[in-house]
Figure 1 (cartoon, rainbow, N blue to C red):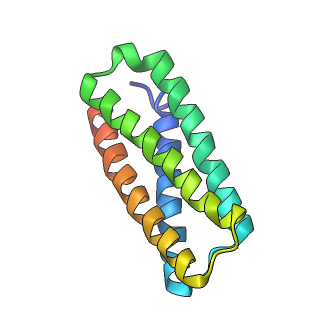
Figure 2: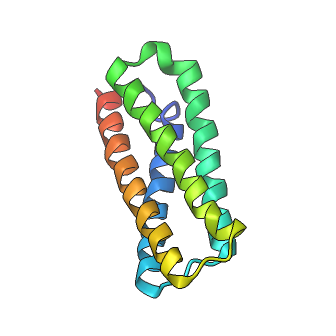
Length: 124
């Protein structure tokens, strides 16, 4: 596939990596600001839309394993958006913020692994 057609996968990988880094910072410092959480949530939602459009237009040309990985990534990205959305919609204690960050980091890490696998399969 061309690099242009893989942009939604690349974008999702960028978002997942950013999530992981920002979650690490939140764990380390015990703070995840509402504006940052809102931005992270919006980026994840944007990645979901792009991946959905990619799957709708290219899904018939992809292997079932790649489609399965990307569908799991969609679920992970949606989960990450909702998880950090808790910071925006609720007044969380530092302890709860820590747990939100740990969950977001884990989910982001799983997405990164799946997206790397998908990229490898799409490059062949």
